[in-house]
Image (cartoon, rainbow, N blue to C red; front, side, top):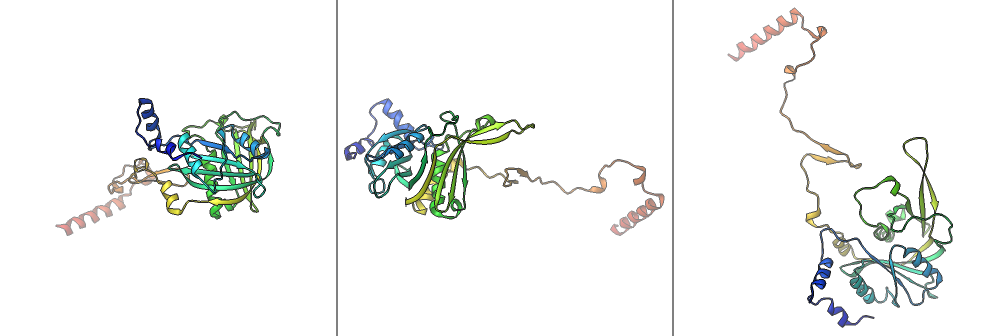
Amino acid sequence: MPSCVALDRLHQKPKTKRAKRFLEKREPKLSENIKNAMLIKGGNANSTVTQVLRDVSLFFNIRKNITRPFEDQTSLEFFSKKSDCSLFMFGSHNKKRPNNLVIGRMYDYHVLDMIELGIEKFVSLKDIKNSKCPEGTKPMLIFAGDDFDVTEDYRRLKSLLIDFFRGPTVSNIRLAGLEYVLHFTALNGKIYFRSYKLLLKKSGCRTPRIELEEMGPSLDLVLRRTHLASDDLYKLSMKMPKALKPKKKKNISHDTFGTTYGRIHMQKQDLSKLQTRKMKGLKKRPAERKAEDEENKSKRIKKN
């Protein structure tokens, strides 16, 4: 357990330029850094939990520490501030809660959301003998099941999993880079986690035919305890700075598909003076011209 002295040192003024640069990187920014995650192995973790953490640790760092997140969050918050990690995964095993995983995230270096999951079935990455994606590949996330949109616990779990696995924000995407799929299914009180490699096959046209090949890991999870932030705190953590909010442009709107629509304001037009293509069939007959001239003369007389 970290001492209070160690925590106090983090609030002292920097004495060197290197320390000053380090603290400046930690300061709040309009566009925050990429979220880091720490994977913590509990002191009593068994082989199943350890292998789950190893499979996930292809993208994150792993450390060992004896702690109980739901009973005492002090050490988690300390290591979060020390390593600048806003996400964590803690693995443990005991008689009361076997094969236990706790996934959580921080806000201002304090625990915001924390959800406990039990592992009922696990197939390791090395047990599935298929080709794998390179490390650091940005995955595509798919969520299936009504619970992810209806139940509050599952809604927060969905948001937490997106935060955990989304990877860095990118501006451009190439088709060949879409090769990693993470699929989460909520069904009958369980969460089924599957990972696939996306294969692009020839289809005879411009758009390739898509096939999914399971690459692991594969987990069957059950929801256990939850520690969710209050609605006010959750809303505060999701608040966007004013500088990043897009300025509203007049007479411009967007539909659900992102198509931009613009409204143009013009003066009232006299369509009678509109130049059209001259055709014999549209020419006025002598009788029509005479009637129109008489009508115009009568209008002028009334005005005078």
